[in-house]
Image (tube, rainbow, N blue to C red):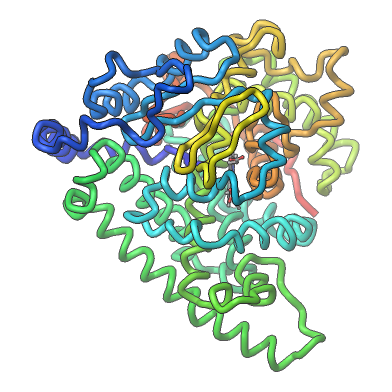
Amino acid sequence: MHLDTATLAQACSSQQFLGITVVFAIIASILFPRLFQKQKGDDSQDGLFTANKRFSWEPSYFSRVRWITNAQEIITAADEKAQGRPYRLARGDTTQIILPPTLIPELNRLGADVLNSRESHAFGLLGHLTGMGVVRKTSFHVRVLLSHISPALPALFALTGKRITEAIGEEFPGRVGEWVVMKPSKAVVRCVSESIALVLFGEEMTARNPELVNLAHEHTNNVFQVCFAMRCVPACLQPVLVWLLPPKWKLLRGWSKLMSYVVPRVQQLKEEFTKNGPDRKVNPDVLSWMVEAGRSEMERDPNVLTALVGSIAAGSTYSIANFCCRTIMDMVAHPDVLDAVRAEIREKHVQVRGRWDMAALASLEKLESAMKESARLTPGTLLVYSRVVKKDHVLSNGLALKKGQFVTMSGATRTMDPEYFEDPREYHGLRFCAEDKIEEHRARPFKDIDTDILTWGAGRWACPGRLISDLAAKILLVKLLDEYDFGFVGNKPLARHSMHEFLFFHPENQMLVRRREDSCGIVFV
Ligand code: HEM
C-alpha cells in the first residue's frame, strides 16, 4: 500500500502534542536501554555501510529525528555514496537494507514466503495502532482489485466521470473570469473521494450519500494523522501516547461508522446472491466482489471486509489527490507544458466530438508525459518496493538476507540517474514525447509498471490500484485543465513538502484558480 501524506501537516499542526512526544521520547531514550540497542536489521558482518547513523552506539532515536525531518537529504547523500550498491539505512524505527533496482527481476521471482510486501505496509502504517494490521493476514483485497475491479473499469467510466464532474462543480469557483485564492488539495481530495467511494461501495450505496463519500477521505486523514504523529516516537511509547491523540479517537469513530455501512450491506448482498443463485449479477464494486469471491471464513467475515475496505480507502484517496495536485503545480510552473497539454485536450475534444470514452482519455500522450514526469520528480514516497524478509535467503550478488529484516529501494537510484533520464533534476514535462522516446512512451503508458520510475512499485505486489488511479487522475486533470486556469499566489511557486520518507502537496497550500470562458465542456460516455 502506498503511504501518502497530504494529511501530514494536520498531524503536525498540533504542536503541543509533538512537543510532549519529543520530550517523552528523549526522556525515554535515556531511561530505556532498548533504544540504544541495535535495531532489527543491524548487522555489520555483511560489509554494507550504514546511512543516517553517526557512530555505532548512537541512540536510534537520533536517527529517527533526522529521518523525520531530513529524509530526502539522507537518501540523496547515501545513494551517491552507494553508487548502485546495497546499503543499510538507519531510520530509527528499523534499519532497512536498501537494494538496487537492478535486483528487481531476481526479487520478483521470490515467493511471498521469502519476501512479504503486506507486512511491510502494515508496519509502515503502524497497523496495530491504526487498524490497518488486517493486511498482514490476507491479500484478498488485492485479488479483488486486480481480478474483478480493474477489468470492470469500462463499466464505471461514465459514472466516475459524472461524479467527478459534479464534485468539481461544487468545489471549484463557479464565476467565470474571476481569480479566486483557494486550497486545491481539499477540493481535489473531495473529487477523488467520489471515484474511490464508487469503486469501493458501488453506485447504489454512494448515490446521494455525501457522508459515505466523506468517510473515504476523513478515515484516510485520521489513519495518517495517527501514523505520522506516532512514527515520531519510539515504539515502546506508542501504545500509551496514541491515546493522547484526538485523531486516534476520531479514527475509532470512523471505523465504527464504516462498519455501520459495510456490515448490513454485506448481509444484504449475501441474501441477494443466495436468492438469485447462479444468475446473479455482481456490481462492479469492491464490496460486491468481496462478497461474491470470498471463499474462506475470514474472507466472508464482515469485520475483516470492513477493515479491508478501510485499508483500500487509506491507500488510495490521498495518493491520487496528491499526485494530481503535484502534476498541476508542475505544469503551472512550466506554462509551455501546460499550453501543449491543453492544446492536446482541445484537439482531442474536436476529434471525438465532445464525447470522451476511455480510448480518448488514454490517447493523450502529452498529458501522460507530464504525469510521468511529475511522478518521476516527486514520487509519493522516497522508498519503494518495501518488503519484510520471511526467511533467510542469499541473493545472487552474495548478500545474505536474514529473516525479519526490512528491504526496500530508493526510487531516486534510477529517476535521478542521467543514464536513465537526461538532465534528471530538471522538469521536462514533455520529455517522454521526444521523437526518440515516443515509441517507448506509447508502449509503456503511465498505468503500467515501469521499473525506471517505480511509481507503482514492481512485481506481483505492485500497486493493484494503478488502473483506477490512472482513470480517476486523467478524468480529473482533463476536466480541470479544460475548465480552469491556475496560478501561484504572488507568482511564488509552491515548495515540495516532506516528512519521514513521504513527499506531499501541503493541504494548506493555496493557489489562484479562475474558471475559463472558453472551456470545451467535456462529457465522459
Ligand atoms: C497515484 C496513486 C497511487 C500511487 C502512486 C500508488 C503507489 C503504490 C505503491 C508504490 C505501492 C507499493 C508497491 C510495491 O511495493 O511494489 C502500492 C501498493 C498498494 N496500493 Fe497503491 N498507489 C496509488 C493508488 C492506489 C489506489 C487507487 C488503490 C486502490 C484502489 C491502491 C491500492 C494499493 C494496495 C492495496 C497496495 C498494497 C499491495 C500489497 O499488498 O502489497 N493504490 N501503491
